[in-house]
View (cartoon, rainbow, N blue to C red):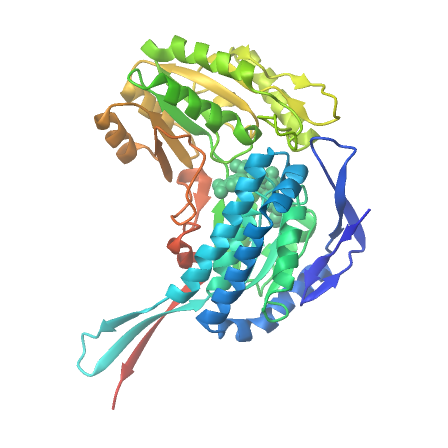
Length: 479
Ligand code: NAD
């Protein structure tokens, strides 16, 4: 089996042990053996990033543009091969895998341009003869910790701005899907970067992520993952005054009003709840539906779900791929049992499937007769499980949508301009979708949530500079 090493200080570094990356569509297919970094490897990676910082921080915008543009172009040119790799290791279907790879390429290209556009401000002073310049500088060494569900796009949307603004990087991708991040690292290893400007350390969160988060020379940590781990990461960073940015879970509502176009509403709900096997932070897990449209909506959902084909992610006829692993499958099954105990009524799916291939397959599940205080509607499941909550009217729908500790994405299906406008203003979420699925975003605008979903400045778009740069205000008096 091919072994894939860590990348530290411009060199490929062997691990003292290796862990397997397994295809969730077929557990007999091992994608590769990946090096488990030690605490010493993490320290070496941070040291290399510290040493590379002066050179990369003083590089020209043109140099940064060229590095990021070349990586972006290579990602786009290899979209089929990388998309296949991504679907094989993560389990999202090929079209989604390739779409994610294209997104990663677009992100690198966008931040190539941002490197050229980074400007400070020249401000007239309130004092005569004095000039004020507000400069943006790199933050320093940044530690990036990423989850498995977008194994190339999330590393891309952290690495590209980090490098564009002159920081050096240590990336720790998820141990459940390291192949895409490794492929990206291989491209960066050939880029015109100083040795140590970009480093990859792979392995378990506690063994590899924690030493990175707690390292005194890591000036900033950008984390995407679960709420529980995010809390620990933030606590460790705040304690040593490191900058921190968290993107975490969701319990995203999709409101469907009586006046919605039913075709649009069902299409949004099916896409938002079940595509990518429901394993998206922006997935619609709470379908909040007003009374008059409720029964027609549920009937159409079930009819549509009967047509969804669950199977191998690499089979082009598949709509929904497998769950990532056995642990996630058990969690999904636990929540399905719990929902039934709480009094929810299962109208479709929710069973484990035995298919030709030995993978983690389940049929997408739809519950009705649920209330917003049930645990199934309060806790993130992170699987293809959605619950319908029946409400009287728009005001109750809005109140239910906001009654959650999360606030990542929120959607509404309606033909009423008044309600769409009001929802955009009053819903407490960082992303608001009108007649669109709660998942699916653009790459040139900010991404992030409110309340328990996010902490710190937004990611992506030009707003990414708020996290990856720090400000220096310079006063000059010309004698
Ligand atoms: P996770 O929290 O288990 O792991 C995320 C990363 O943190 C992994 O690389 C993991 O190894 C690492 N980690 C684990 N323990 C650590 C520790 N003690 N110190 C440092 N690092 C540690 O999350 P996951 O299962 O990989 O991803 C699923 C979660 O991610 C879901 O909650 C989902 O909603 C969330 N997510 C959020 C967004 C967003 O942008 N808001 C996007 C994708 C996924």
